[in-house]
Length: 185
Image (cartoon, rainbow, N blue to C red; front, side, top):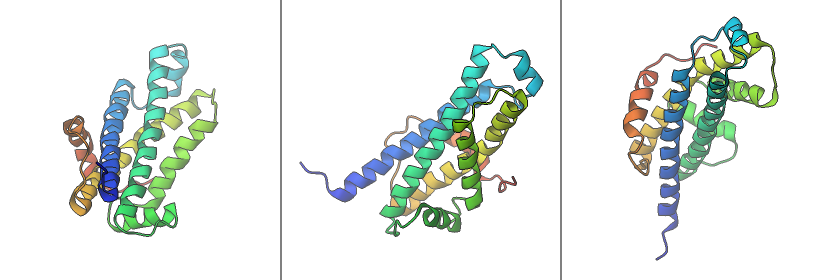
């Protein structure tokens, strides 16, 4: 039996929504393991502590994965909403206009921060601490975007995550971020 194209597209978005919830769950697990805020002296003293640096590496990866997954899902929902998919910036402006993003520049700041880590191999512990403290500070903003986006898909598109596997933890983690004031970089 052939699945109608619209149903297939909605199902794909539902899978992305579940992936967003899963990304939040695992990113929060990594954040919970680190001693915030990170201090350069502490990182220097613990420079061979595998568990700490694996946690930070996981946080870096999971932050990037959440933003990438959100971006893919937002683009998919945007097209399902009947909006023209000209550019990613126009799409972000749409989500800013409807209140999912507080500011387009917040998204760009997250992207720039995560891209710096992907291309810099820093050995200065002050710079490493600054990077991860920035990721930690930006994470609640991404959580808020994720929560508002999942709500938007529910109300505007009647599309829900494929399963409830991560729903309770997602709500608990993102609830404070839903109501958080806009980011001030």
